[in-house]
Image (tube, rainbow, N blue to C red; front, side, top):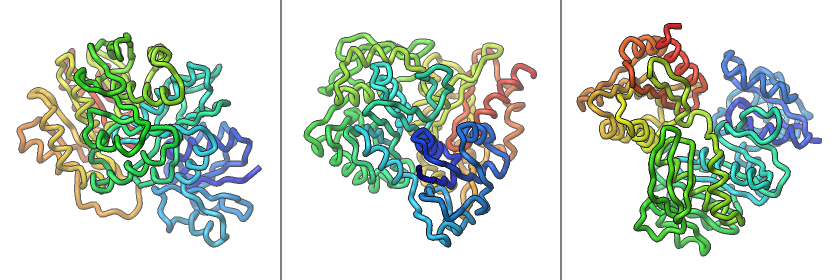
Length: 458
C-alpha cells in the first residue's frame, strides 16, 4: 500500500484520480483551499466518506511517510503544502503524470479537443459499460448514469475491465503525456491556448495513438490531422461528406434529437446538434475497439448526460432554467443555438472564468454573443471568477458587457452576483429560457437554483 497526498484534491480532475487510488487500496489524503474557505463542502464530504483524510492547506498534513505528493497546475509553488513537501524531499508529481500512468496501464481511450470532451468521455464510457466491458472512467464532469447498485452520479467509475476512458486536457499542455490506444479530437478552436500552440499538441497526440484516432470532418483544423495516422475514423453531420460515420435527418425533440447514422435510426436524450456530433465521436472511438454501430446506437439511447452540460434545473411558470459549463466562444454559441431551436426568449448569465482566459477570448465572446443573441434576448455578466493566486486583474466582465451594449445588445454587468436572481425573476415571462454559463465555479449551480426559486416566489 502506498501513501498519496493530493494538494488541490477538490478539483474535478484531482478528485477522480484520488478516488482511483482509494479503490486500488492505497492510503489517500489531501487538502484544498476551497474547503478552507468553507466552499465545496459536499465534495469534501464525499471524499471523506471514501476514507480520504482532508487537512487544511497549511502544511499540517505533509509528513515524511508520504510516497507521492500530487499537485495540479492550479496550485502555486509558494503555498505551504508544496513548500513543506519540497523541504521533506517528497516525490512530487503532477496530476497529469499520474493520469498518464493510469491510462497506460489499460487499453486507454483519451478524449481531446476544445469542446465536447467531457460529454464524449461520458458517452464512450457509457457505451462500453452497456456493452459489458466494465471500463474505468476518469472524467472532468459528473456522469448522470450509474452502473452499480446504490451508486451516486460521479466523475469517476472504477471498472474491472481492460479499458480506461479519460478526458485529456490541452489547456495546460498535459495532453502531450498521453499515449492512448485510441485518441479522439472533437474540434480545435481558440480556448486556453492560441491555435498556433494547439495544432502541434494535437498533431503529436494523434501520432501517438496505438490503434487509431477519431477526427471531426466538419472542423478544418481537425480534418487537417487525418494524414498523421494510418487508421483514422472521421465523423460528420454533413450528408455530402465522405466521413466514416455521418449523421443525417437530424430532428430536435423536447428531450434531445432523433437522427440516422449511416442509415441506422438513433435517439439521443440530450439537447443540441453539438451532442449529435459528440455521439458520432463516441461511436467512432468504440468502433476502433470492436463495438458495432448498432450496439453503440442502442447504448446511446440510454445516455443521461453529464452535470452542467445544458442540464435542466427546473421549471416554473413555463420558464425553464438550465445550468451549463459553456466557457469559450464556441461552446457559448452552441448552447445559445440549441436553446433558440424553439424560438424562446433567452436570459443568459455568463460568468467568465479566469482573467487570462477572458483576456485571450474577449473578442471571441463579444463576437459569439453579438451573432447568437436575438433582439429580445438578454445577457448578464457577473464579475470574472477568481480562484486565488497571483494574476493580472486588468480586465473585467464589464468590458464584455460594455462592448455588447455598444453592439446594441441587451447586456448588463452585476458586480454583486446575489442581485441577479431578483433582477431576472422580475422580468422573465412565460415561455422564457434562462441559462447559467461558466466553468470551474461549483456555486453556479446554486445560482441557477436561486433564480428558479425566485421565480417560484420561494
